[in-house]
Amino acid sequence: KLYALRDVTGTVQSIPLIASSIMCKKLAAGAQAILLDVKTGLGAFMETLEEARQLANLMVDIGQLAGREVVALLSDMNQPLGNAVGNSLEVVEAIETLQDQGPEDFLEHCLHVSAHMLVLGKRSSDVAQGRAMAEKSIANGSAFEKFRVLVEAQGGDVSYVDDTSKFPRAEYVEVVESPRNGYLAQIQARSVGEAAVVLGAGRARKSDPIDHAVGFLIHHKVGDQVANGEPLFTIHANDQERLEEARVAVLSAHIFSEHPVEHLPLFYE
Image (cartoon, rainbow, N blue to C red; front, side, top):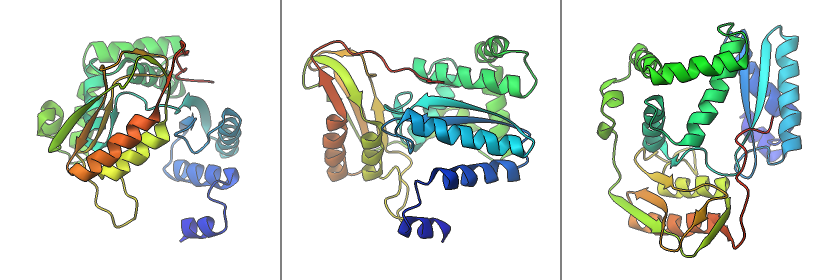
């Protein structure tokens, strides 16, 4: 009811209400140290860096006034992070990353965030040491083993972690090729996310069911040089009509340039 009220009063995007909504949950859960990963860009609620910075500063202030240690990072969400978009696809990608087999950008993001968390948790004296600890936990398998412990502790079926082929698979899998040569200037994260909803990976209405098998694998990043006919993205779908609609949307989300384009940063601050 509160969100419905904010919708009709035009206050869904009110930064003070967003900050208070997020922080009241963190504080109520009892966390003494909080790391906030505040997204900014085309696929984020805060599309500009200034808006994201304002939200981050306000949430840090709230946490500190409540006697908590709080750090906020500002990270990019102009393009999808990692390759996978969709429920099971993203879980599989996370498991692969814990086994040091995930996408480079997703692994780097996780290591950076983990380093800050280890400092906040008093496990490391600085970010460099925390980074080294996080890297070691991936290399020696302890991060993956801890994930198995967490899944089991919450009543999950660890066999899915050990054998990701058990996750639901989509009936239709289609590789979409690049229609031209060029450099990727944009991969619009919001458009990709909305296309995932079309497939059934998210809800357009509260009553909509979730299809855990569907989604996309995005094969490139902004700044990559792509050749005509090279795989651009892969669609996982359970409905042919939805697949065709999603194909058009995600293809349109890939914006090409004839000239070299700089890669986007993972973090701004």
